[in-house]
Image 1 (cartoon, helix red, strand yellow):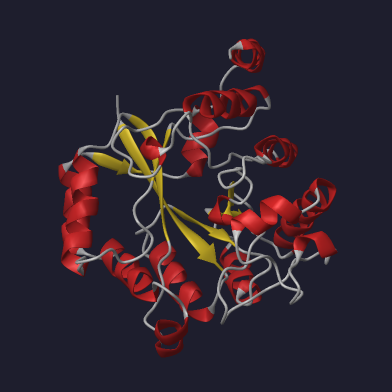
Image 2 (cartoon, rainbow, N blue to C red; image 1 turned 30 degrees about the horizontal axis):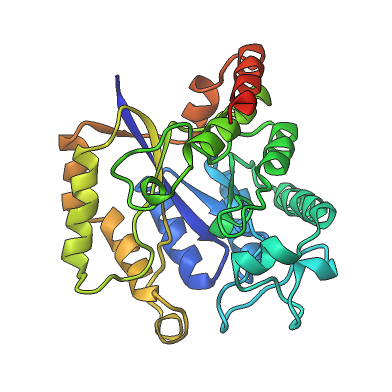
Length: 304
């Protein structure tokens, strides 16, 4: 089997510095895709660029949280259960899971999709900022609601059906196998195509890490990539004095931007025979039979 990799740039539209980096990467085909934040300050600039080019690989980054003290945003619908006392979206996923009303979340998902569509963006897929809909903090998962909306929009989504044993985040979570089986079976039943694997790497700069060690760690992963379609996500940003001073881990974002233009990384992709792909491939090739998937889901639900 082939080994295919989606490299998605999260947080498109967050700021001018993010937009600059992501647009450059998409223009040069160094990344597979990006996902746009309709609630963030840089959305209009990113949306205008995307619509003008009819950029085919920009998806929707469903955003329910606003994590930076120096760069905040609010929901589109303005429902009070979606905001903290400042009137902005919650800073943490835990607060969102504890306080957001489900009905208000559903209306907000629709509003974010509609804003992207009305801006002329040919939305390619859906994912979720900070995993706020996945229930990882308190166990309150809104994955079924997200998948239902995604099926109505007829788009693929960022989920996964297998856990790569070498993934530092997902492989460390206990009792994750059953939720993954349920979520992937539900996606299949609803006709929402998903990748096979989701691969993570530490978001902050870890102790002792340098650009070179970070680069080598990601190149090493290319040679151990599992067969099938994997997705990994990056948060590339152009070097910006205000961002470096005010946004945590901005240095890592600059590294991720630099990495995708690095000749060593490009060589690693070729040498490891990894095919850079996007969500059009997922949509065209990874749909599962819906009736068979419904049976599989019922069996998974029956297991304790």
